[in-house]
Amino acid sequence: MTANVVVIGTQWGDEGKGKIVDWLTDHADAVVRFQGGHNAGHTLVIGQGDSQKEYKLNLVPSGIIRKNIECYIGNGVVLDINHLEKEILSLEKDGINVRDRLFISPGCPLILDYHVELDRAREAKREDSKKIGTTGKGIGPAYEDKVARRSIRAYDLLHLDALKEKLNDLLDYHNFVLTKYLGVKAVDFDNQWASIEKQASFIRPFLTDVSEKLYALNKAGKKILFEGAQGSLLDIDHGTYPFVTSSNCVAGQASAGTGVGPHMLSYILGITKAYTTRVGGGPFPSELDIDLPLSPGFQMSTKGKEIGTVTQRKRRCGWFDAAALKRSALINGLSGLCITKLDVLDGIKTLQICIGYELNGNKLNLLPLGSDQVENCKPIFIEMPGWEGSTFGVSKWNDLPVNAQNYLLKLEELCEVPLHIVSTGPERDETIMLHHPFEKN
Image (cartoon, rainbow, N blue to C red; front, side, top):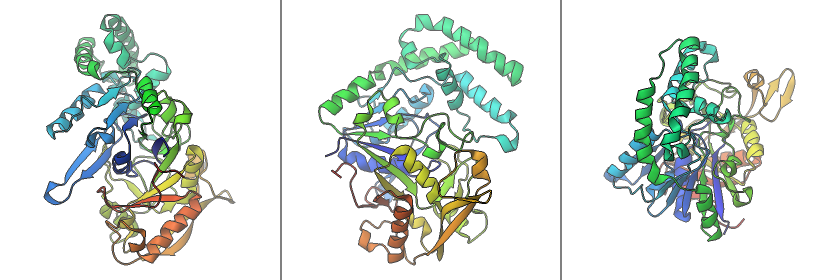
């Protein structure tokens, strides 16, 4: 058995990672979140019929729904403790034991009131064409403070006596930007300090040396699942910059964001939809019109229920982009693919797949690095026949329509990554397993 698996999104996020992580935890002992913040949204559907329950998670690792699974939040995550508390209380109302199974790194930078105010004021100040599409939750400014070496981290909440002076200096700096440049109100010191004291009381019992714990689990032969957020094409270094998130979303971040060596990352599973979606601004070569009734884009949007878990904004939809997926395969070192939401394409007579682009008279078979280049790319499509009937809930490969099998195999061929899992619905058993990530290759 391989030891550990990293699950990452290979598109612009919202690929269905939460369901797959939950499904894989049946074979894992621990689940670790390694980047991002509560701008990520994982939706899990558990049970059937009247007993069906939907969970929307932002910070707590998806493995928390499974009993006896240890869950970790690594140092690569920026932490809004107020949001975390609400999420934990919601889970506890549903009878889920969180406090005995959740461990948080003291290295997590904190998202505080001034980060949220900066995030929202900056986005409001941008012209419409330059808006990033930020969730306004303070994620970007919190990562900026981290890189500038001025973060308040969870560790600091263990030493409140030394924190007041640091907070005072930080507010002097950030309030100057808020009032003099962005033209909004300053953040009150007393209110922020009262919030920090409350947060400190709540978070202290969860803080632990995550790196040490993960090494101990690995040494004991336990299986660890590393859970990514957002998608690789939103990566701060490798995505369609500047229309990206503020963290590294690629598989390598599982090492840096938790404090373990790369040797502990045994298998990289890339999650991708059978089509493509994107929330917010930024280039999208294979985009379709989602408002034209009865069109493929309209079907993807409505049947796929393409509404952002966090933002509640409509996701933009388009044909599968194999050239973009190949870029993700390169920057992640994918071991296998999991294709989700195949059933959304049921009944579309002719499917198209983007296999490359025309740019300035040249043909490209890989997504360019610059967003301005991507914006000017004209997609090159091939066509494939669709299929009649439903693929929803199918759990065996041979039960799929032949044309659906052919479509999946074509995606595998174009992306040059083996297809290992197909998800045909939101529930755990609505999954076709061709190769289990925790099994030997």
